[in-house]
Image (cartoon, rainbow, N blue to C red; front, top):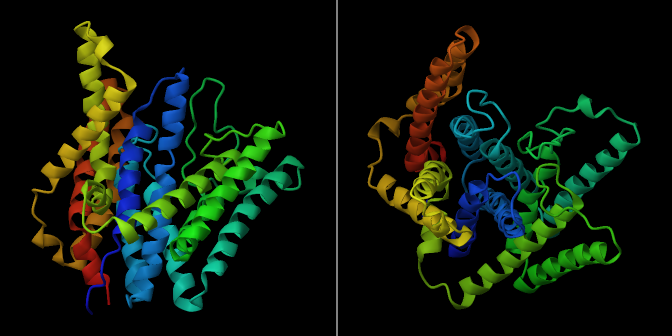
Length: 391
């Protein structure tokens, strides 16, 4: 089958998300400044952009003739090998089996592919699906508040739990619950297929609703991501529709070839892994400057620029690694998925049986290195897997 012409507007959206995601993960202060709150809150929208584009990509794969079986199998592999990313996050470490970003991507992509394959719906149907999922979230919120349903009856990967935001200021990360995070996949498909003016209208409508809530004194939380407040929902949808409007406009009139953002978009999977050690290196530079009494150099804009430069450097270095011919076999991909999932179980043994802090820390560091390596291997070779499963 001939390869379809690549839509650079989708790479551009992912490229914008690639800048936002590392920035969202660099903040660790329990008492952030107003500027940090706003920069971090806006950068958190990067996940929304990624998920919306995944929905579009999944729809296009089916529409372009890829088999449903191959598409579903690919995203199952992505969800399983994506456990390696969970192991790199400080809120999980050895407890790696959360329903995190790669798992919601896998589920949402399969969800969209099945809808497109069996129903081939018009764009308005995708919008209705997205609205229905959001409505389900707030209906369930009401039912829980009224005591009609016990919230504990739903697992965390289905619906966000209570007490996500602790009194200490820390977050008890629940992962990406299907309700409501699943809504962004069909909404992205709608935004992609809609005319530019429709995206502009939808973004303005969402922003107007948010402004109206503030005007009438409701003051919704717009940066509480994990339990998806009405404020966060409207703000994120506003950003998504405006970004689709702008990028589609650029694609029509300006975007004639690749640029640094579209190249970042193509390497978005690799960026998800390499931005984590980039954050560690950026923090180390900050510690060194602090020790040298040069802390005045460390400002928010400088930290962000340094982080993005290091992340991009790591991507360039990783791209020098050739594809592994060993992964030209589905059996070897199965073995890699098996290793990814069962390594954390093996590393649980010293944590559970040996009460020695040094061994515990050593286990975490070794697991981190191995799972990071697996993740980078996957990011550099996933096209081989896609080609093996395509037809």
